[in-house]
Length: 139
Image (cartoon, rainbow, N blue to C red):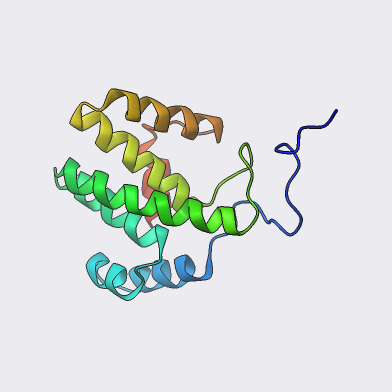
């Protein structure tokens, strides 16, 4: 008996960034500030996740959690629309959202949420505290 969730859905390309995430990231890399990038691309999971990471860096875990949660919702919606199934790789934007959500949740004392995020990131083959990974996801 096969597990339907183990096989990729027809047409699903795992871990491929959305066009809007690519455009948002390119604008940030070209020098635009994150607030402007988010405002121009409200449907970019990457932009919201990067804004969450910036809030975490500046010591605002509430804003970080909020921004990352938005990134999480947008990113998983896009994956679902692309035919993603649990157990498959996620995009960099979703991975970024999960890392920032987990770190912000930990800072806020939301240990159950932090643990769920850590476990999901680990299931993707990464460590939630990998600062080099986090920096690479934003750059």
